[in-house]
Image (spheres, rainbow, N blue to C red):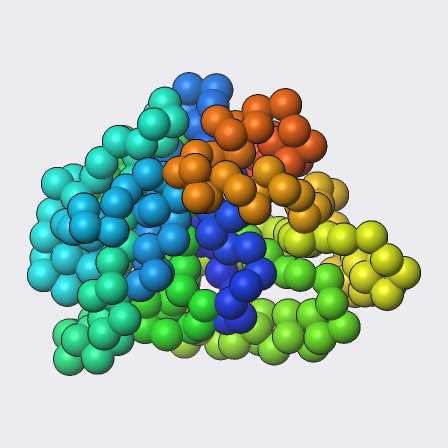
Length: 254
């Protein structure tokens, strides 16, 4: 299954979700490929790749027909492979705009490796750019991380509307797998927003919530997933539960 982690807003925990969900899904000997589609390459560096070593990256696969199979690298997590991001992705939209069938580029590129993995997770850029559209067209399902603040409800509604327009225009098969509440903190106002989101979107919101924690803040600088950095923390438990919910929802779709 190809799973895109998307939101057209930055700072909502997309990379945190992509990296740690990927590690959680890989833990029980499932094969997972994480593809970093963000020019900041945060997911790649979180997985221990130095900035000087980012290439060949997903940009080469999208823009230069570089074989996806040759761009794959191992990570310190068993059964979790990576295709890194790089700064070249920042200009990818301009280059892709001149390509015939530009929205299908990633889908075609993944054909050669889909059968090798149980999950391919796409860490998307914070916009519905051509890269983001490519991710949605390539994906079977998508997860939307959302920070529960007062603008979240309207922002989420607008984003889902934009995604639906992309799906209809390009006949994409990706469906919403779930909305994930991230960076959850105590407080009455935040609790009210969470309840509003759950009331509006009901079972489309995952039961699992990702709370803010020191371990999640410190793990990226150490180049470790939460399971390497703090395997017995509440954050690690939360991502295990999220992986369980993902597996249940995927199984229910078959």
